[in-house]
Image 1 (cartoon, one colour):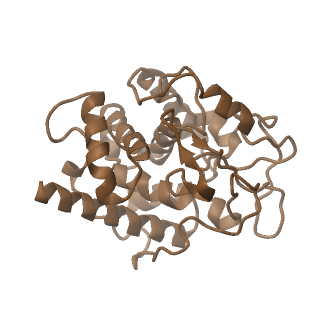
Image 2 (cartoon, rainbow, N blue to C red; image 1 turned 120 degrees about the vertical axis):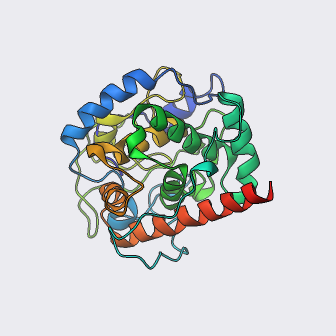
Length: 293
């Protein structure tokens, strides 16, 4: 979950997205990087934490469910900082010829049934990797790390029966419990006037990557090219998460860098181990598909 102030009432989010399907574009890359430089200076609180400090909300029934999207996933048996998930650079988009949106779309469409991630979500993770290769190549962000986080946070935008539309927004919106200081829950007073979470008293984590509005206000970026940064829109959320993970000069291909990044997103070691297991799982499946191809 993220600390920042951005907000759009859930109903308004769906209404805003009704215009036209969005596809990740490079149009926002320049202003995005400027925000990243500011972000490095002020990030002190984890982005997520939703599943450690709170339980998730079912978008259809309100923020009361006890279900956690990744509850049944076995965490990896690995010590924090000891290693990063085994990756292969050629599992990402853009390595097998071609360039641009068509290649990204084909990569996502081909890989989605293999790794069990919706193509629309996979496209957003792949787009974020492509942007970071250009803007911050030393970070070495992999789509598999974002996919692991996306699986834990919201089951890739499907939590509670939500479905990601062509515009990249889950319907119904995915909104967490009120951060009201209840047992096991952080206390964060409202920072967005209910704009994104519909709550004018307390903040709530929102969207596929479960950003807190106060964090989104600092580092939310527009990856879809629709002119606004929206934590409910999966392209925006995935790219914002990517820049967050790459802050402070991290190299996510190293054990120290990867763990520093994932624990900045959520300070639970079990959370990090679960994301680790998922990242390796997705990489293994993608490698297998590449070998067969």
